[in-house]
Amino acid sequence: MSALRRINKEMQELQKNPIPGITAAPAPPGTNPFEWVGNIAGPPDSPYEGGLFVVRIHFPNDYPFSPPRITMQTRIHHPNISPDGRICLDTLSRRWSSALTIGQVLLSIQQLMGEPNPHNPLAILPANRQQFNQTARQWTQLYARPPQPHNQSTQGNRDNGGNDGSGGSGGTGSQ
Image (cartoon, rainbow, N blue to C red; front, side, top):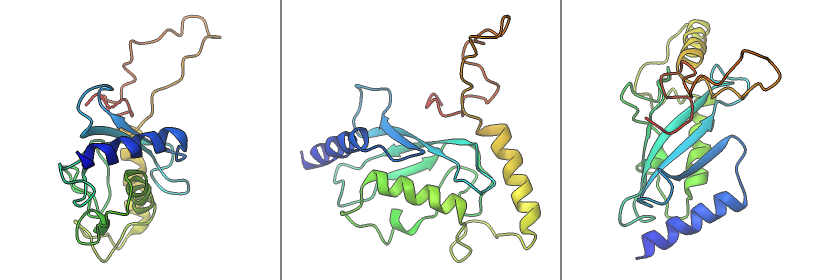
């Protein structure tokens, strides 16, 4: 099956040459190689900076001749991402090319987060960009907080069992 070979090749490439701020792998590991979970760090100098956004990736049986289906699992306030997680990105539809890799597509999503496309929105980009950015930052703080590192030096500060208050969207892939 050529799709499986291509998917495995891309997984090896991501492991060998990681993309800063982006991870992706089958979820859970060792299961269906056509179903992945990815994490995208919010781009610097954007209202999403500091957030970690979880995406679900489904590779079709004829991949790479058809694009993967990618949905945002973490709530995000963005004009090109619908409330149900659909991502309006032309490379995931009419401009798909079999030369693209999942790493390149995830990088394109990260770039879209930093630079919304006003010509192809799912929702109207508001005229008050400052208000939009404020809401996007608030949502990032509420829904896209990455897991906090363990602090071994502070007594009484124990691991809370993985519950960081992010509702499971903090990049764990457990949604």
